[in-house]
Image 1 (cartoon, rainbow, N blue to C red):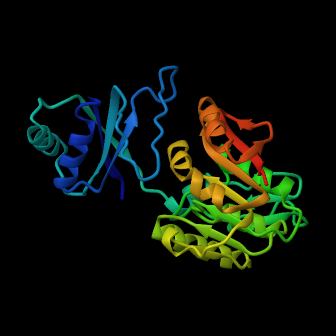
Image 2 (image 1 turned 180 degrees about the horizontal axis):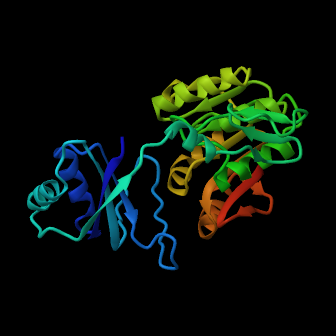
Length: 296
């Protein structure tokens, strides 16, 4: 069955309100897109975990999928009335039904991290059967290996885990970093996330990869220090968590921090430099990974 997609051109003041009104009217789904996507005016917007996004694109497109019996013009008029504005410009697009599972799977190919480490979706054969292959599918939590921050951390782990180190993955998401650490030789490994869904995803992914990892919500994490702490979150949480994360690293141990835009690196260097001597930063597509050793 084809779907009817309603695409509404609006501004930053009304995009979210229109989305809420459309949801109240019973549309199947709503999303907001940058009207300039794919052009030189495209503007990335990055939110911090657990914090509201306080900005929106100046020119936005609200995309709503209508139920089978919904009248587009009436739905649009009712949404505009609820927001208190004139009916904005909109268009209707027919989206043909597809095998959405196959379409989604086709967008995720195996990802090479290094000569010996790959992230491979379960529906793909491993490109290199002799390599260390982490079986991971897109799912409930962030982290498939496709984002630069995840790749930077994976490369760091592959290069620096010698074998047997205790490790804490703080903000574990899908568990990908903790799983990779175990696969390349880390010893006892813990993962932490604030999202209960991440706990579900991480445990499933660890089981799928046949590695033993203990996952915790923050207030459940046992006391203790680790040889290695890795945190792939974002700058504001890294700032707030700095004393706690530093206290979790043994003297002489190492920390790796990512989720940091290049222009934010100096702020993190300044804060964590109280405890750590840093190596040169690693950078990819405007994101950096900072790593250092804790002073005795």
